[in-house]
Amino acid sequence: MQGPLLLPGLCFLLSLFGAVTQKTKTSCAKCPANASCVNNTHCTCDHGYTSGSGQKLFTFPLETCNDIDECKPPYSIYCGLNAACHNVEGSFYCHCIPGYQLLPRNEKFNNSNENICQDTTSSKTTQGRKELQKIVDKFESFLTNQTLRSTEERQEISSTVTTILRDVESKVLETALKAPEQKVLKIQNGSLAIETRVITDNCSEERKTFNLNVQMNSMDIGCNDIIQGDTQGPSAIAFISYSSLGNIINATFFEEMDKKDQVYLNSQVVSAAIGPKRNVSLSKSVTLTFQHVKKEDPVLTIITYVGLSVSLLCLLLAALTFLLCKAIQNTSTSLHLHLSLCLFLAHLLFLVGIDRTEPKMLCSIIAGALHYLYLAAFTWMLLEGLHLFLTARNLTVVNYSSINRLMKWIMFPVGYGVPAVTVAISAASRPHLYGTADRCWLHLDQGFIWSFLGPVCAIFSVNLVLFILVFWILKRKLSSLNSEVSTIQNTRMLAFKATAQLFILGCTWCLGLLQVGPAAQVMAYLFAIINSLQGFFIFLVYCLLSQQVQKQYRKWFREIVKSKSESETYTLSSKMGPDSKPSEGDVFPGQVKIKY
Image 1 (tube, rainbow, N blue to C red):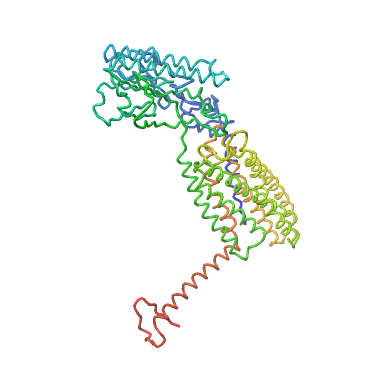
Image 2: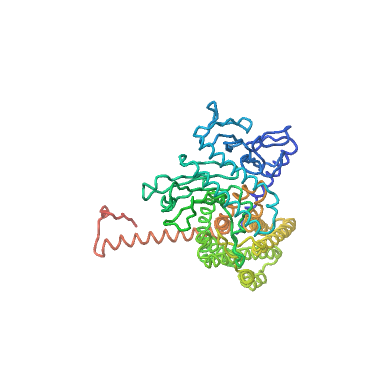
């Protein structure tokens, strides 16, 4: 049994349309956070923020205003010598780097014209910082070289970048060793961050480990590996983080030409160097810790896992109901059963296997199984829509045997055979595209994801057409009925099922295709909430709202209560014994007094 669960979705869309219309024609009564109303008709983001769509004026109610990071490209505010930019929500400020301070005792300023950072250390240290600043400025100039950015030869880019990195490392070490009394030097701008450590005591602590931290990336290295044993004089370690280098040396530079695995660069590029001599062998491991650039939304993850767990329980209960409830077993119930089984297995495998990226072969198998199970679920959704249409078309026919025979003949070959053929062709043509670096799912490369999205979009489109046809048939049928109450009830029940059919089997997945533009975050949450509870909707509509199933549930409940009562009565009788004849007022401990 299916219910009109599409109505909440339609109400949401209508209210959204009304909100857009009202805001466009009359006022902008409710602009998003960090935005202001303009001329009572449009919204604009406040200073220091930009809209998700890039538009200066907007009326879309789900638009968001995001903070502008003025300290990073393409803005990269220049604060002047011995200063660095620091971004805050909706604004930024400049501050003096360690070893300098703004006189008189101010900590913040707005631009290079206000920069009067004064040295607070020795002249040698000041000279060292100036040398580091020159290195930073030179690297900044390199990053703005548009000719290099547009170079198509990867080998040329790689060679040039390698030369620059070696030059930066050498000059940083040289600068640090010129001022050994300044044991720690730090400097950064929008593109580069440097930290150096100088060791002059020949590692007085044998197991001492140094931690260098720049831009949330860190390195742990043993002291003995820095001094290099036979080196006379001070030794230095430099740790460098390149904020914008990933735009030039992207993930393709780490892919091997003879392999098809896709690599994603999800951190800043870093380098480290030891001086004055290059140490090619280390006595202990060096630990590098990277800060991820793109982070997963923990709230979205929790919603997905909790929702899928609830969905699994509901799908299991629904499948048991379809199997054990004899009164409702027919072709429609068989379709519901196989849809529930496919979704149950798909969701279960998703929960336990979507993140098992190692070993690669296992991840590919999991991705292929998920591909098949979800395609099979959608194919059974299509069969549900087809069966609903055929039932509506034959409302005037008392005997539905022709429909049942047709569905029984096609549903198993179509429901399980078509997805198997699709997955077999995909796996045979591009097996390496099953499983990604962080998920056991299909790659986006070469349009491979369309081996899943293509059938899904086609099934949703067909179900939408069938939905419209069913409502058209029902409208004609209702207009021709007068007093046939039972027939009217059946027709309305079919309309109820048709509405639920579109909502449960189509709209929830359609939200996944709408995660683009300024409303992407909202659509992602809607998709996670509604789609992860698809099993709950199926159990609600097909079981809890079905009168026949309700009767069967009540019957099972009465039988359970009766069985429990008979068990307690038997226990009481066995305790009394055959020769026992207690008086009417006698009650044994732990027993119940029963009168007949």
